[in-house]
Image (tube, rainbow, N blue to C red; front, side, top):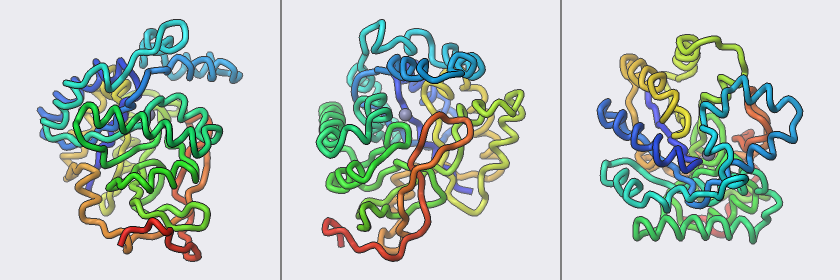
Length: 311
Ligand SMILES: [Zn+2]
């Protein structure tokens, strides 16, 4: 059983508190993982304002314990309180991850802006977000990023095309079954896509069906496939802070079942793009998650190779 842990860092608090705790835990357990950090401002409070407009928000907020999971400071960030930066506020923490052997990729610039407006941003806006994010990454590490993970698993044909020009080793923008190449506007893109294959903890909890942590652990262990690559996305804000003990219990249980933990860059290094299936990128909803996400669609055999295709 192969398990790739994809750790998304969406907020200032996730970076300052969740990342050091996760790093320490993973190092103690001897487990590899890949971090994807939002490079720009923490506007997560704006996600709250968006959510308040939805009916039933308060009961969901209460049920999913958003304030206790994310903290009041995070919930207000970018609204009543000024937005704090995420990656740029902690360059040494970022470099320390790399020195510790962890992979670090880009999780967008303004997470909330991308997640809420990826369609409205259009080609120009998407390129601005990517340009800003890649510039911050270069400022911190002195070299360009090699991987990208879309905020909120939301992408568009414009975003897929723009990313395809950025010479990345891979991206992890969608939910799906196994690595593939994306088809956008009838063309096969060059960059390998490694989708997240499991539901996130907030989705599992958001369904409201599992009553306690033991039930959540049991649910997850039944989801991991023994004969395939499992990509599990966790959040520095959640598994890194309030749910750290549950996450540790999960990785230990997986290891007892023979799981091998790999980084996504290791996975991609043994893949050959030309041998991967080509699939449409579709939009769908998931139980326990508000709004749409991008997902691996059916295999497509009609698409043409894009002009930017690497040989
Ligand atoms: Zn995220």
